[in-house]
Each structure stands twice: as structure tokens, then as C-alpha cells.
Image (cartoon, rainbow, N blue to C red; front, top):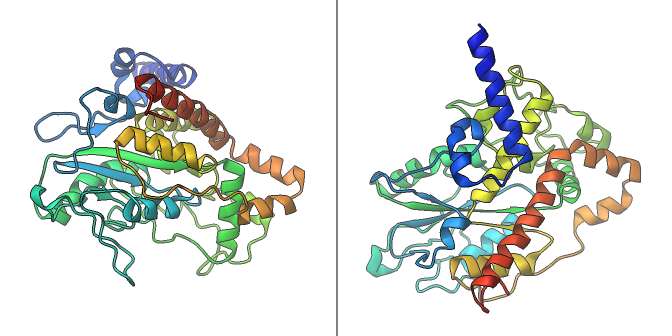
Length: 357
């Protein structure tokens, strides 16, 4: 009995250290293993690293190999501007072989150049492959599913390198946008929320409403539901949920769970090849282009007026503060993301005059 308690205490201390000191040198972080909250080091079938981060891409010899086995994986978090970004990926990239988008079809065919075996896809996203790992699959689902999904789609196993990309949004604006979307009838009930090899039980993740949707929900009702997945959605969708027992909350305190989720989300954000910020469209485009060595044929548009900004003006200050408190993990994650984005842009600028500018 004593030994398991001591092990649990050691794990918790290491978790807190990862949370408080996220910039630990890689060799020290690696020694922690799964308890250190780093994503498992994904490897190809030959044993080579297959999940590449921004740090990996800073190597002088890096190139996103569209002719080879490289795959861009878009982790699409709801109400972050991901629909627009997803369309940019399939419609606006300057490529040797542009994605084929036919009128009336939701998905585009993003095949590799003919000389590289043109039936295989280089992009795993809603508008290319579809939701093959589930509707709005999160980090936990994607990392467990993508390789198998690609094997099934291409009808053969292959050695691939994966480059995860995502978008984050200012948490209060994102939360209000989701509230308005749910008011209009959205539910995302098709999401699987798979974790640890299974979906959550009804007790672990009860619905916030009876019937088919939560249409016309009041703001206070939306805030009050304890299982509302809109709360701290960005942190949850970027974290490794297996570290907190998936959706079972009985194994630890809420405070300990929050520490684990935030530390994991921050670490996984650092492991992405690219992330952008909804409020920084032009900088996000610059960062993507400099990181991947790809160019968009049209500039990203910064829309200052949205349903959520209009809604913010109608929400009393006390309620806005309640949203901030409720989404405290997302607020901290977004602040961290802003600093990390600035750091990445600066590092690209230091590499050359045409990088990150």
C-alpha cells in the first residue's frame, strides 16, 4: 500500500514540475516518461521519429516532403476559425499538384504529385480525408488513430511522418461563439470522445440537455452545466486525456486534474509543427509559410466583427468575468500560446531575412 502511494506522490511532484517549469531541457523531460506529460515519441515502423515538431523542422535540411510520406494533420478545435483555415489548406496553397475541389462536394482530393504515387494524400483534415478519426477528434483521439486511418484509406501500411497543426482563439470569445452556436441547435453529438480504447459512459460524460439538442439554452444554463465540453475546450482537446483517467473524474482531485491537463496541453502545443491564433491571422499565415516552406495564393483575412464579439457587448461585465474564471485553463493556455508564437516567429527571423516576416 505504501509503495503505490509513494509512486503516486513522485508522479504528482513531476507533473507539478512540468507545469511550473515547462521549458525543461529535452533530456530531463524525456527522463520523466509518460508522467512528464510529453507526447509519446511516435516512431515509424522502421523506428524513426514520425511525429515532427517545430523544433524538428528548424533543422537546416528540413523539407515538408509532399512527394514522400509526410502528412499534415489538422486538429480542428470548434469555434476557433478552423473551418476557414481548413478551406485555406485545400483551396489556397500554391502546390505542384493543387487539391481538386469539385463543386457540390464537401471534400477535396489532396493527392501527392503523380511522380510520387499520386493516389496518396498529404493532408489529414475535414476537407480532405473527412472526419476519419471522429467528428472534431482531439489530440488523444488523433494520435491513437491517424496512422491506422491512413493505412485503411490507402489500403496498405506505410512509413509516414506526421505534422500536427491547429488554431487557438481568445477563450472568452471562443466560449461565447460556441454558446451562440449551441443556441442555434449545434450539438456535435457525432463526436466519439474515445480515450483509453473506449467512449465515456453516460455517467462519466452526461449530456447537458434532454431531447435532440440544447436549442435556446440560456446563458446561465450554459454556464451551469458541469459536463459542458465548451468549458476549457482548447486545453482538453490538446491534452493527453489518458493522463487524467480520460473522462472518469473519480481518480484525483479537480485541482490535480487541472494541473495535469494544462501541463499536458502546453507541452503538446510545443510539440505541434504549427499553431496559429484566430486573432493574429496575418502572423499565423507568415508562421505557417515560413515553417513549411509553402505559400498561400491569397492573404488570410482578419475579421474583427463576429457573432461572439457582438455577443460580448451584450453580456454584463460580471458574466464575462464568470466566463473567464470558468475557462481559467484556456486563459492560461492562450497566454502561453501568444508567447510561444512570438518566440517561434523570432527564431525564424534569426534564421534569415525571409523567415517569419
